[in-house]
Length: 605
Figure 1 (cartoon, rainbow, N blue to C red):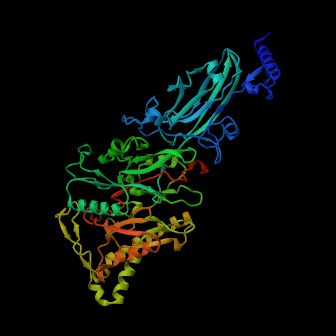
Figure 2 (cartoon, rainbow, N blue to C red; figure 1 turned 45 degrees about the horizontal axis):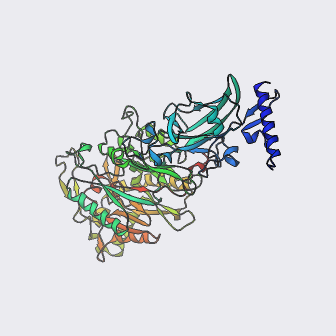
Figure 3 (cartoon, rainbow, N blue to C red; figure 1 turned 30 degrees about the horizontal axis):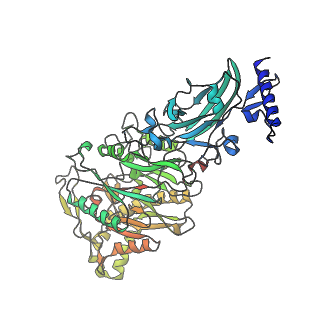
């Protein structure tokens, strides 16, 4: 009797015994983890690698998990995580070591099961193989004796006992999709006996991407940078603290003078928006996605305070990623300013982009780090990144002219856009309403500072001007007309991309001025550059002329926001941010929760 015909005899004998005992369930080869015989009379094992193909947060051996284990589309396919947090707080990212760092880390493993084959012939063994990237690293773990241990699929042999009882595996990645790797792996199990192939199976999985949070996502915490005993910075921080306390929003300051940042002689790097971008990653988890918040560090290797992202942000359910060109800066056209994250924003959810679409200032003659753009595009679900021409701006960031607020409408949001045209019209209307208004003073008590290279570099001079003198400044008005043309072009691109009507765009009135070489920045505080959380916004104090005992621009902006159900707050930041070509958004950041709509796997890209 050959071994395979002996197996057939064993199956038949067991079936007869069970029927003789009155069992109503017919025993078949499939019940024993076996397939029907081949033409040669052999009985082969039913080899199955099971994954969470239906994305309900569990792995089962029936239904869609079984039927679609080797598939991937918007409805089916297994997901695993880039395990870039530090659940045991040992200062090593969990996906960078060869151990499972406790129960919390185990939750970050995507489960794969080798389905039991209880009737498997003695001497059969299994061998796993993994088709995936050379970088990042994809690790496979198995439960062995009640504990997780890393295995090398190419060297791991599953015994007959393993295969009969089934094996639980866990999969993680050390990083996100890249330009070289689309994020997909194939795990294969081959069962043999001696030199004879008995069966095989494969499962397809895709790593979860890094998703940049939309400003409309629920906010958990607001950040700003402090330090150095600078009065103007302390005033800004105090305003933020008071406003967030009133709104019951958690507020955390980052010490910009920490010795580890190494810039004590230069003062704190107050541009909290620019040295990090906050987002998330997730896989299916049942009632809610299972994932973590992730901070993307600016590509700028010379941004010392950006090290805070790795040293202080990372922890349980808080991950970290950093991509930059090997030789930074990357090319002659490269502008490090464009690698600041005020230059990376998200159009909120629309159409084919349920997680929003990234947009970014970049043109060939003035380029951001190509490695950053390649990384963002590799994530796919919010891209490809919409690139806009910001070369007409001195700083060059998209948050200088655009932001978004939630509204009660079918779309759920509106675009806010900078508008020198509206600012000029507003000033002219004040004068037309009462010629005496022309002598009212704008920017009273505020200062500008002579730029680097000026004989009086760093010295202050008065910013105060009457409305009449501003309107009579032909160079200023001509420059604003030019900048308005640039704004209209990027506005049209954003409107066309998202299908926005003019009624879904709110013009934020402020004038621009030339800084150098035809490039501009906000002359009046750029109130479009704001911090949004919930139904509140924090803007720069406009320091416009006083009418009826109130700043007329602050009154106007409050009314604009109130009409959309938004509460407007105003923070003092002229000396520390505005005079240095930035505003509230530039000096703050926000950690936002993984949205309930975090099913990125339903995005067909």
